[in-house]
Structures are given as structure tokens and as C-alpha cells.
Image 1: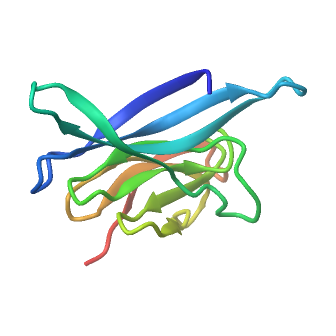
Image 2: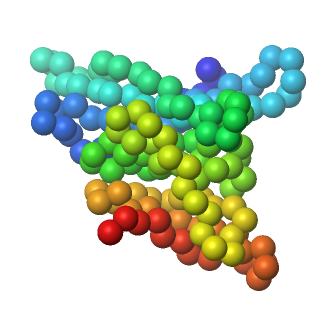
Length: 147
């Protein structure tokens, strides 16, 4: 891929490893379209004190039947849960939560909204973001949480 962007990182785990999430982008060779894939890097410190990549994982982005053309990992908590958008541009795709174990959940769009974008996730797994309210023609704040 032509571009790799890191957007968020977790704190170090018990083994001292850091997880960094983001996305990679590439231009399609035939059709003039940019494709973005969500990605997770795991890094650790070597004996000289330098960080190096120990694993690289493309996150699932096939949440609405088929592979998403543009999917973005945006933020992550210390448990390794990542939130972002899968399927299209950040303001037009499905809001998603990638769980540390590998599953992906499509977040519901709050009542009255037509599109939603998650912005941040805390260590309890609660997510804040925004939702486009078509009826009122405005963007509202949104929260996804579990008691």
C-alpha cells in the first residue's frame, strides 16, 4: 500500500507490547479510487531500546455484505477494542467496534439518525461520536454504552 497512517495506540500490556491501530491506503490501478483498510500493529521493545513490529493484522471490514472499500480504525482503549468506520468514507460507512478477540460489531445508529461516526472509546468500552440527524439537518452528539 502507498500510505499507512497510525491513528491511535493502547497503553503497554503486561508483556510491554504496544498496539497501534490505523489504516493503509492504496490507489486502485484500473479505477481511480482510493481503498483504505483498517490495520493493527503490535510492537515491542528490543534489547537496544528500539521498537519493532512483532505482528501486523488487517481488521475485518466486511460488515455489510462484501468487503468495504474504505474502512478506518480511529481509536482504541487499553483492552485492545478499536472503534472506527467500515464500508465507505468516515462519514458514510457503518460505525463499528473491533473487539480485541477479533470479532467486529456494527454499532446501531442512534434513533433519528441516518449515519454515525464513532470518535473515541474509553477503557469501559463506551464510545462517543456523532450522528447525522436527517430530520433536523444537523449533526448531534452520540454515545454507545453498556451498563
